[in-house]
Length: 482
Image 1: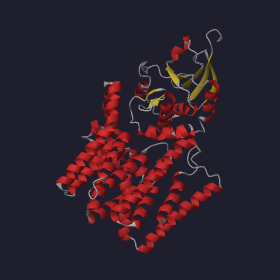
Image 2 (image 1 turned 30 degrees about the vertical axis):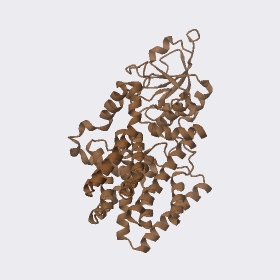
Image 3 (image 1 turned 90 degrees about the vertical axis):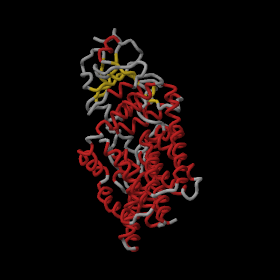
Image 4 (image 1 turned 135 degrees about the vertical axis):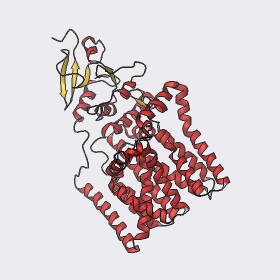
């Protein structure tokens, strides 16, 4: 009970500390948040909706559902978005503690594993974001724990099936990690035929449950769903087309990105793997595969983005706990855990007493913009988003242009447009610069990157707000401009 209370305080201190400040970050956070709000605004709870239209099938719905619930209760606020991410991280911490304790029958090992995950740089970065990386890590962790229990109590195969389905609904094809990890573990562990058949049945049920959403979307939208989600999107962004050359780029495409995300985790990982390999038990075999499958899959496809390895970070934390359990004395383990708990507790008190602002303020640039759009655009009306002349617009699928329209730098890439959608709940209509010369719609507020439309290039537009690389305009009627 002591460790559970200490982990709760530590988790709250690190991941639920002042979730109402600094706004939501970048492209991913605000994109998922805008999609969840779009679900609420359209009443379309099956298909993620961005700017009142389908998000063009780039992500399954679980992350959007996870965010839509607090938005429904608390409104579209920074607090609701970041609290959800922090709560998911806290659940991941407890999941690691529970599963590690069950695997290795040690409260101290489990507590060290949970604190390694709790204080990992990757988790500290993403743990309070409006994202599902830590929620997915918790899902896979509980799936592995359920599979381990199922070999003794078959009723847990049902839990494994449900958690596998949830994993698929979080990350699509990557959500199959529990099936891949579990299958390899059972074969390596020389499971009995009965166990293999039970696992096959549970895995099939999980795939059917998770895959049912994909089937429904295919029935609704047809081949374009398969083409965009399982075709172009996965092929373009997974890097699977570079499979054969991936081993030649293992350092820059795997080790270096992983080191940047979690240097401490990568530094300790060889010791954790050595500890598991030197004490090969059924439990350590499970953990070795749990760590290596996500890393190997993503590394070999030249898509080693660390956030897509989130389940591996949970396994890495337990491996480090396993290593420390066997090399530290009882006193050293107790003192180290006490010091870690105390540091988190002091940090929590300090941030309550002093106005310590953690990280970058993502609303520093956009707060005036959001307030202006809210004031100038009535609820239910739209504003205009100017896109480059070479960007093709699709009237039937308005968000398809986002798939093809990506900037290395600019307000869209920084999430500025997404923040407007999330905080104002006012949608946009995309137009080309020349469309504004004869525009007769009722929209009067125009947002544009200075790259796509140079300020002063259209006499109908009066600037009302200037940003670092964007301008917000008021569109005058054709009779009023000089």
